[in-house]
Length: 374
Image 1: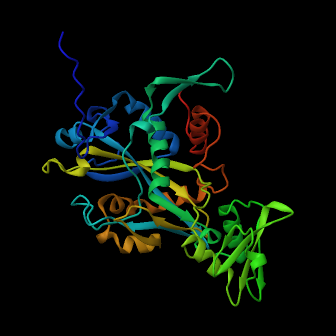
Image 2: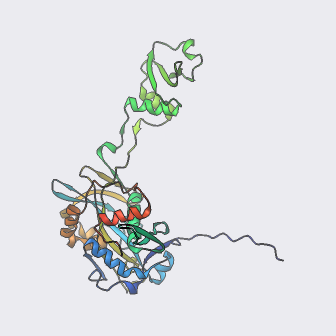
Image 3: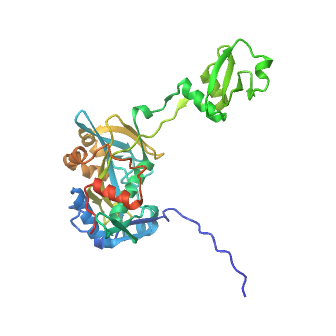
């Protein structure tokens, strides 16, 4: 009997990850009007129905295979983040990295999105025996629901939205003392008291004694304590000395309450250029709305956050935009209509949805005014 061999470790290379999309033969030629480079808007329920028609061609492959053979139109939820301020629509714009594909390099964009990943796969559903009941069909992944869940994941990974109260700011003295108390294991809080000089009595049985401060546990409350300082020592100096960090409250992401409304398709192809990124992608256009006082920052390290731009400002920059953003410039009237009439900002948080997956996706579909398959 031959000696058992250890399996050879796989050496992963660039673009070996799985991605998912529609086989070309299942994509209608008139889906976006001109598959060589165009966009077309549809009602949300029409997007759902069209994707259900294409769903039989939903498949997954390695990205390296797709790039070489161009035998899959990878689905991208191309999401526009917008807001309405004084009845004017604004769109979140960023600039792509210099190292991006040639037709995207340095281009300005108003669309956020990425490839569908294995963990994004979401099942189809059928009507259950009880009214309103949905039953999961786990072995049949859905192109529609997978694309929606992928888009929400990409938004959370690529963009950080912040409200005014969530921006980085100097911490108050109370906040600094709270952080210090938790770090010292005194969850009931730490007080601050100035003294004329450090005495042996203060130092005796102290938790910490330094030239800058003395920390004593409260004799009547083992979960509390007091910082004693002399001279002009401030709470901020204590905080910096102990933590090694400035007393700055970190930026916190805002709650994202809007629905994501699918509203069209976008595509571009160039058959004379093998490897052209548009030859292997099909975008599903979606619109997402945030409150008027929110700001944003693109988290991709090599991308540059440009800021909020009005529709007119985006159109003025069309020559510097990447192709898909250019295609959308003639559809801003319809996109603004979706932003104003179908997107809202008071729904349950989409970044921390409640309930099981079937309930989450059913809620997403309802928010997008889609129809569940029967």
